[in-house]
Amino acid sequence: MNDKVSSPSASTSSPKGEPHSAFDIEELKRDMRNAQLVDWARQHRSQLIAAAVVFVLLLVGAVLWINKTRAERNTAATIYYQALSLVKDSDRLKVLQALVGKHLGTAYTPLAEMQLAHLDPQHAEAHLKAVIDNAKSMPEWVWQARLDLARLRIGEGQPAKALPLLQDSVGAAYEQLRQSLLADASSDPADKIRHLKLAQAAQSYDHALKQRIDNELQALEANHPAAGS
Image (tube, rainbow, N blue to C red):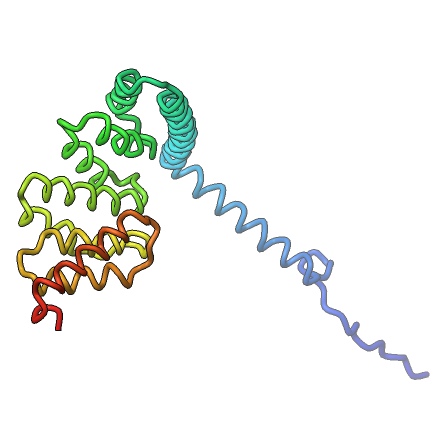
């Protein structure tokens, strides 16, 4: 009688008799990575704590800076509009001087300086320079301050000192005044006529200035016909 030989099993077993699934292997790898991460964190614990402290300090500093900036802006706005509401120039002058004296880093400081240039003519040049040099000044304020300072120097008989302020370009709304001041600063009739013509062709927002330009150009061309050709 022939004995039946049993065939070996098709599946292999682990040393413990249980097969390893792909899921078990991935779980094992994940546990190993987590263990390595925990070990790395333990070794660099002091650096991690220091980094966390720095982060918190930076966050607190940013919040304090934002609150300080907001408070300064609110304070400056209150003082500035308080000054504008005053009737007497002398009272307005004192309040605006107080605003500038507080050295608040807001756009209200150059605005106050522009007002002070008219209220405090003895120190107008210093006020206008402060507007020009202030990083918080809008381009329009800088253009106006440069033109006002140039006009001041021309009025003082210093056209040569006014010219550097008039060389840089300005917005279209300020070009007519710039060309008019360039004509005022020039001593050459042909140069004056050229700038007055450019002023005449520029956008006009000031009827009185436009009339003055027309009159000056007409008189120059009558007295210096060769210069206008």
